[in-house]
Structure formats: C-alpha cells, structure tokens
Amino acid sequence: MLVNAINQNLDELIVLLSQLSNTEYTKPCLYLSNATIGEHTRHIIELFQCLENHYENGIINYDIRKRDYQMQTDKDFASQAIMKASNLLNKPNKDLQLKHFIDGNEVLTNSNYHRELLYNLEHCIHHQALIKVAVLEYKHLQLSDTFGVARSTIEYRKQCAQ
Image (cartoon, rainbow, N blue to C red):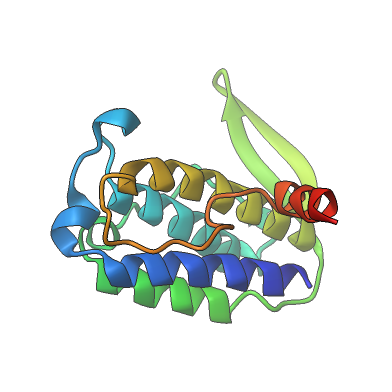
C-alpha cells in the first residue's frame, strides 16, 4: 500500500517532467529563491537513492548524497532515475538507523524501512508542492489535482465531498 502510494506520486512527477522542456526544467524560479524544478527533482530522487543504497548496511545518511548534476539538468535522465528508484522500493521492512550531524555532533536515530519510505513520500510531496509554485507560469502543463498535496489532505477533501 505504501509502495503503491509512492509509485503513484512518482508517476505524477514523471508526467510533469514529460510536459516540460529542458529549458523550463532548468529555469531558476524567483519564488523558490532561484532554485529550479530540476534541483528539486534531483533532491527527491537522491533521497530515495540514499535509502536504496544503504538499505543493506542499515545506516542511512541523507546528508551524504552524490548530488548528480545531470539529474537536475536533463529531465529525461531524471525520469529514468525516478523509474529505477520506483522499481526498487518493494523490500522487506527491517530496522535501520539514521545517521546525521546536529551542531557538529553525530546522532544515530532508530528507524525502519517502512518509516523511511513514509518519510520519503512526505518529502517528495513537499518538494512537489514547491515545484507546483515554479510551474504556475507554464499554462500548457496539466497537473493532477493531487500533485504536491499531502495524502492526509486528499483524504480530508474526500470526506468533505461526501
């Protein structure tokens, strides 16, 4: 169920990327402190890749990422990376540890694979909401009503409509 929700969310991102030119994908957006859609997309993908790449050793550090410039400048390359990440999500739940630094101190936090999948879904939605701001100027785009909207908000709207 969680993997299906993530895949649906990532599919929405791929649909958006298919409608953009590379120029639109890499254009700085004033309302996002001059960040680009490509930068936000790369960030989404790289967190999923971190989880995948460190699943086996069980220690996840989202701060140490490749930061692949090609993913933020080539929308087709990014779409392929999204599809690859999407295909690798279905793994057994297991205990993990998050490694991060706070004020120069290393901190390990207990977690598990399903919790990190949920984090990545929420993180993806958050960045899609930002991407939505960047694409408002592009009138040719067609976004789903759920693009960049939290799952809890979608459920709430369904209840209100009844």
